[in-house]
Length: 227
Image (cartoon, rainbow, N blue to C red):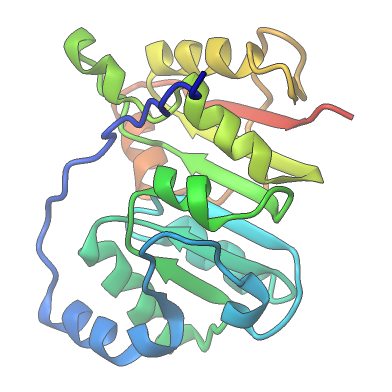
């Protein structure tokens, strides 16, 4: 019997325009820090030119979190996966301003990157902060946090790795909690059915500020591989 096909949600809509400065930054920095991904296993040591703990951020948006963490942790490598060109350009421009070299960027569907590009146990930390909640019921299938995707994320985590998520949309937080708690190879750090307190180490981004301005609570989740 053939395995069931992976349920791959189309969790994004490409939108937004790159500024001239962002376009110039992409043209200048892509050869050194961009990854042309077309399927196939990535050689992370070759991409970064060293062996180090790797953090993968899924959908880094304007790059606030990715840049802050890379600047704070020069001893770690950061792989950002984003489909929107404006965010990629902003990250490259900020890398130039801050003198950062420990970031690589893939402009591609994150599910495909985890499915074929990342080997089992290769990721020390996976981050998914404030993904599109797709609030309308008819769009729930587009939500990125789905059982098949969670299994891909869990597979990529190192034995001592960690998966961190955050959202300001309570119904999506409950959905995340239910899906992740049901994954047998992951353990909820806060305990079944619970969220963790907001980690002080997580940078505050515009998405969190916007959520708080709207009166939304912030929900953080943390999972580790089953020992």
